[in-house]
Length: 368
Image 1 (cartoon, rainbow, N blue to C red):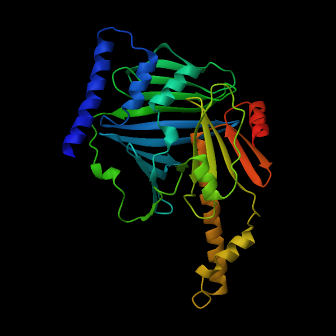
Image 2 (image 1 turned 180 degrees about the horizontal axis):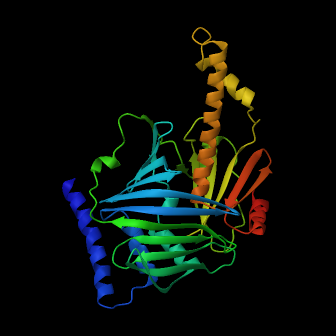
Image 3 (image 1 turned 135 degrees about the vertical axis):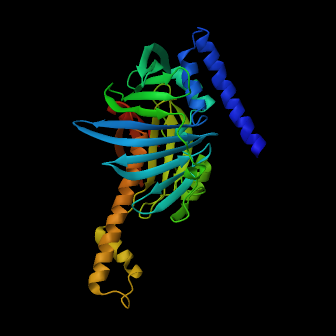
């Protein structure tokens, strides 16, 4: 195992060395090569940094701070702060991630989401559907960065502007623009250190938390036939896709938290943007009264007074609402865009994508 780890580290540093030699020798490095280098080698050097992030939602701006730790090979820890309070800790390696929610003292472990990986096939698709070009160099934290733009070849798709350190595999800043060319988020380093001591224990799950392992249940990939057998209904698929998009996979979403039904996700991509169709049978909506009635068994009449039972039901309902909202918000944080709901027979389909409304309508009309 030690030899394997050393080989991984050596392989990463050889890649870094090659790019350094090309840059220092005055050779022009293609923008896509700098990007690929940064994506492939994320987490392969030891570093600590602070990142400021801003999301733009109309007239409302949402900001947060991230403390970032890299520990080779490929171990990454992100601590998310809002209003100076730790809200979430996310730790990942090449295959898995775990999320620690301080308010609930819960750790949820699952496979690393495939949409955050830039695989070779997805990179090839990105190059087919987007222009990738360098537009100059700028200084960030006194480090030289190549400024790279990713512009769609087909109108009505999102774009990116990325600042890549020319000496290390680090993206120093990224700006995301939606399909309407409006800036939707900005993220950049405010502090960066390669000498800060990092303890390997920061990448292991604390022993004092409640542990939920959803590696085999959350976001499982299926074939269409397997999913239909599992869910016992005919899946609705889109016969129309915008130019450049291909089918990526079919996934079953087992909710991270209680109170959310299992859903199916059909995912499509053009290499950068992700189009999702969530669907599930139409069911009677659970009311607050129904929910509280369903958890009454947790509050035995012999152990709790009427006041304690009512108070307990109120607390549990609020937790349920917070958890459901968090799960929806987590997905939207990964993917900005518009949403459209349509009922196709007895199946409700929810289409999410950063695309023009008319494209979502065409997709909705093609579902069968």
